[in-house]
Image (cartoon, rainbow, N blue to C red; front, side, top):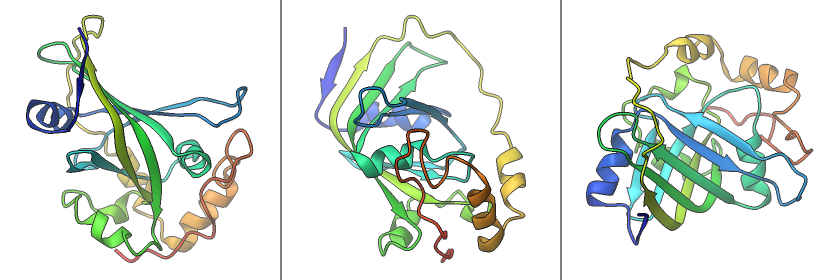
Length: 195
């Protein structure tokens, strides 16, 4: 039976912070727009900021759907599943914002991720999510799976990029500046790294 929570604390916070992977879902306002669902991981790239606010690091990739949808309407859902231990699924429904590298809040937000070297991953933004609805449900249908370790491929791939080459990489990708549905995505040129 599902339960609604007022805050991300106690057992709920412990569960969320201990999961090695979570998923983000966003969509444009257009009824025929493309819904986006993305897996997120990398140890240390997620943080609970307070009882109703969470954040994660948005790294270089081949599209920017989440950023585009957040810029248009701010709607986002995050989901964690228990692949080990007791069955559980937690969803945080809320509003999100992409805080870019030239935003005055960026440096302070980075302080919540001490275990990650942002220069290795082509960090584009910090996604900050304010919860409107926090719920858990049973995870009876979620299979048991074993977490072995983080892949090091992303870090190795983007560690060789500087701001200029990263900007050139983003400009070559079809769905970075504009989403699949033509919404504004990642603002380019990429602001200089200050980390």
